[in-house]
Length: 342
Image 1: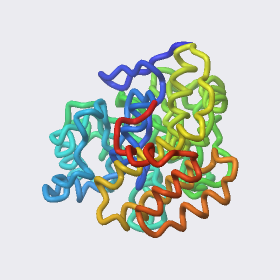
Image 2: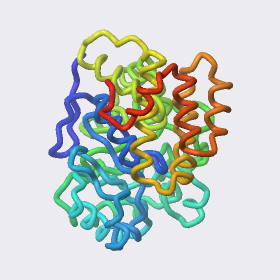
Image 3: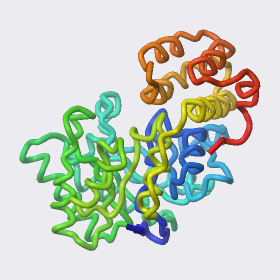
Image 4: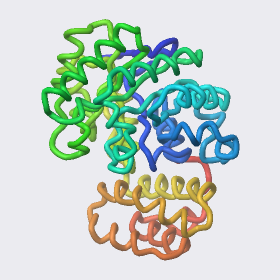
């Protein structure tokens, strides 16, 4: 079943990648994705106004690591000139691809007429895309949703965007198979990708939405005719999804689920990496809680483990409680900052 996907001049040896996810895909999550088999990772959403500020880009949070390539940066903005400057700055910082986000459904983003709000302005979307494409030499993609909502006008705008970027020969179009106003409710409708590929077979289309297990991902890829998959929420707290997807695409048996101890070691490694970036410790704990929600989904005593881990007030408590719930001996816990155990 081995398949590849090309995004501009970049050839991925398997047809999926770890997608940008605001608030999640900082270095630790990207490094996990890489180590578990992702051929491409994306940094979290970056405002164009931040990307053109040298003081911001000097922060460790924004700089790509030498061990992350290829890595893409995703820009959020609503006008072409600053988006183009941001793209140039991010490529200069070391990013290998640029994605333009016209899909974000966050209310604060929509109020500023950015992200998913741009789905109602096809001409502006194209203007921003062309300005960025002409400003850099790396592949440029855009992420959209299946319209702002389900009205006829929204659908017309969606199809105009698809038609115009296809005519421009865009390197890839990423489509989340819900409308903007649906956010993450309901079920992603992958039929929209089937329709897009039927009309534009030469367009590289990457599908997104409800990719939480290998079989669903494979079924959606086959049924829609998509060229690849963008794995976002499904891999947060579950990097084994990436491992299993690579095995499936390489024609290997899906590995057995991780043992409780393996899960614990990965959680501790992830936490150690977060501690190195987010200081003081209270900030690291607050940031890491969202990942705890994902990791504990595999635990046989999920509710009890989740509540206990979320209740940890200090780093010492959190590390100790992870060791307790995941059956790790004290010496294993103390070495949590070492190489990732795969």
